[in-house]
Amino acid sequence: MKVLVTGGLGYIGSHTTVKLLEEGFDVVIIDNLSNSKIDVLDRIEQIAKKRPRFYNFDVQNKESLESVFVSEKPEAIIHFAGFKAVGESCQKPLMYYENNLLSTFALLDMMQKYPKCKNFVFSSSATVYGEPDSVPLTENSPIKQATSPYGQTKIMIEEILTDFSKVQKVNIAILRYFNPIGAHQSGLLGEDPNGLPNNLFPYINKVAVGALPKLNIFGNDYKTCDGTGVRDYIHVLDLAKGHVLALKKLEKDCGLFVCNLGTGKGTSVLELVKAYEKANNIKIPYEFAPRRAGDIDENFAGTEKAKKELGFVCDYTILDACRDGYNFQTQELKRMKDKK
Ligand code: NAD
Ligand code: UD1
Image (cartoon, rainbow, N blue to C red; front, side, top):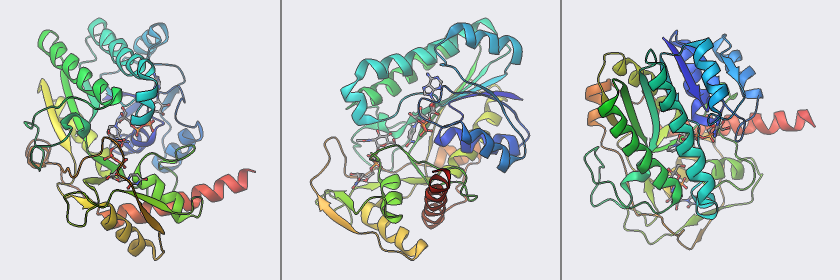
């Protein structure tokens, strides 16, 4: 099957592309490099021993997009392209609504025009569940009022896809990711945000290699096992596998399919720090800081549906993710130094 991967040079897209190539899928990437580097393409090839075809443009550009549909004739799309920083989305809401919504519209428009492409996988997020009434969160848990424009774009796109699936003969998988962490074992792919990381795991990575002095733990008075926030951290390679399984499900003409991708296990910030220290035999200095606005006590995924309908189970542990994340960050630092 030929798969168009938008945002294929980004964090989750690059790992998924490797997995797709390893599984024998033909992959075409569109990425405008707004949050990724072109080197990732070589690294994908280095790992998978195959080079995906690559187009550098904004998915919103309908002319360029159509030329790719005409020349490549994709049968499926995995749509990762979009902006994802919660804080930035509150500062620049229009930029988020524009990029996340219009890129999706452009792709759905192409699916209408080129019906040979009838499978669509969308990167949604556990953020759509907001503050949970109870955990684990199942796919039937209520969707809550979003606390950021970023979260709102995910809710809106889920609704648009649901309506689209009612009128167009297409198969759509809405995958609600919990917290992806870790990196490829080769140390070639991972998440290395510019500037101060917003998310916990990349922040720990930077502290681990000495690029930042200490971790600030936002709040130690949550209603959790040790007072720090609890989330469901899933290894990015497991997440990548989930996309391949979702494509296989869509191939069976399943229509609309909504599914969590998580481990089913909650881990607190302190537990993650301890795991990181254990996996890598290092110390992560930390300090407690005030709560971050909008944060919730606890969430983790109900995994029954993914297991039953996709055959999805996680292969990697938190310790694996901590080891792989540190390995990537160490290698990345060395690569940066060598470049200078
Ligand atoms: P990322 O920023 O690393 O990857 C996104 C890629 O899309 C980047 O390479 C960027 O250059 C590209 N891109 C953005 N807008 C584009 C456009 N209009 N045209 C072409 N390319 C464009 O992000 P990620 O962590 O890999 O996330 C991928 C998707 O998963 C996003 O939609 C994100 O909202 C969603 N998601 C991520 C997380 C997470 O924790 N990383 C959690 C839940 C959902
Ligand atoms: C965040 C987003 C969510 C998005 C997800 C993936 C918010 C409120 N939510 O989820 O919408 O889908 O990222 O991009 O931003 N923490 C610290 N110190 C830090 C960073 C985080 O203690 O420096 C804590 C947080 O308080 C939280 C946990 O670590 O308890 C995880 O935070 P983070 O990695 O940012 O993910 P989420 O907030 O779960």
